[in-house]
Image (tube, rainbow, N blue to C red):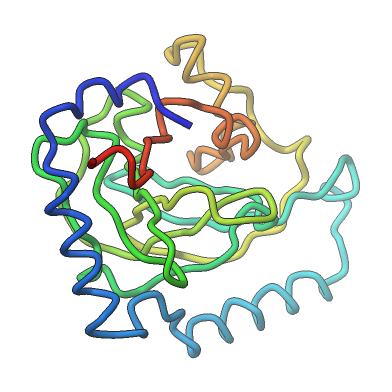
Length: 209
């Protein structure tokens, strides 16, 4: 799928990016390795939360299992069913000078090229320049990577406890938000995120021919 901002990328050196990715693939097979200790900790936390008796408030509506992460100064959360992997080797990210702010760069996931994007520009904020883990998201298959500054924890919350998106968000921004937690975490709408054409770019080999 080609995003609306992709037209801005006509001057990008895609050939150079693909050469870097090819060298990356040849140098290491560990580029997309999930940190086993962190993964085990997250699974243990998930099991602990799911085993905990629900309080009265959590029985008021459907429960959501969320991955809480931070990008820039904002906390976000996304349902864990949309998160396939967490990559913790940010140096394996190949930047694309001149790319739109949404496109942070490219990386390899099991030999396939994956675009890594920033969330902040979707909400009118400047894109951070820091490095951090990459959340591989998709519906049944990897579709894109979300760069984060930190992956915090797994949360289990009742949908009914979420506040509605604030009126300061425009219509397009509101479609990406399921709600806001009482401590200010933006809970993303996974299906809307994966359906937003601004986050997808043409990464086919024909693009660089």
